[in-house]
Image (cartoon, rainbow, N blue to C red; front, side):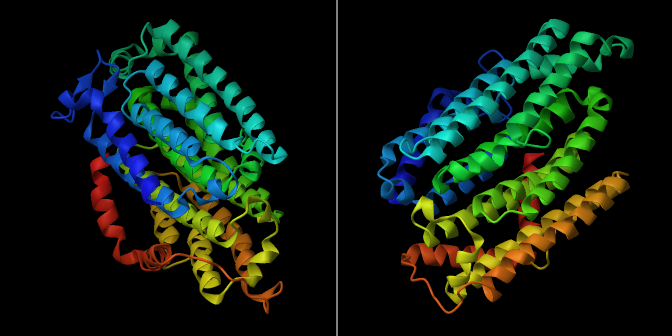
Length: 442
């Protein structure tokens, strides 16, 4: 684990060294406008990297080592994903964003298919590559149309041109077509409905250590998604209002319905991710001040999901063991209670962390005048609580509850998981601090 932390810390230093001369000015623009170093981006990246360090610490490369996969391969891919993350968040140009998005994506393709002799892993990596490539093509196609209509791909220049344009010129076919293709490409990359169909299959074959990187890789995409649609293309929001409205509802709804019939743990988590990430899709049509609550929900959900994956890694050290939900009934009482607390958090049941994240999302939608989506999301959330509680019922009342699994776990890892359980259960005492610090990201 210490080696893993040192490798990620080294990668953190490596990604900064070309720009040490510019760090003194947080709001500086570097490389002829290709990168922008704002307090918002710095704060968001700090939270995200802390989350990744937490995930790497919990996984500790143990799964890769036990599956006869060299940890150095995973470490190298982690470094590339970190580099891609850094320059995506700090990008000030659509071309720069696309370039480092593909660096991150290629690393994820390799990590997904890292088990060369496992057909599920190879199949998942191939499907991820196909769907990722199609989404990248759509994204690049939209980028080319935006350039054709505006003769620039720089964020600041696009924002100035759009704000100073005549409203009749904004409706030109090049700009609107490019914008809609950009929306479609980002939706595909994020795995939002209706372009979410690849996520369950990819989660099915990927290792648990790879799933931690999936969670981390979604964060810069959501950051750019919100920044583009609110700040850069905010004047075009009326073109995408109905689209993002439908995408958010479909993601929450399809994710909830897809999780109902799942008996496989990983596919269950995949559909749950689609549903929970659908909440963030709505913030593309809200103001930048509301983004605070989108970040709040993103980090809460990412922390809870990362901890669930860490629990799975402790419970099932072999990838092939993670199939049916019934096997969870054989866990020791502490693990079942801890696991239940995270499931209640995902369901949005108080006083767990997920409740406060979802509650603030409902509040900001209602205050913004979007009462219908707020009510629909509330109804879907009540519906999704069913399958999380079904999971809890399996933990305590079904399966071979008389058979207790012996789980080898280190002292430090046990303390860490225990602290996260306390954080999740007593989140009411930490919510104010989290919101106060996240204010720096808006």
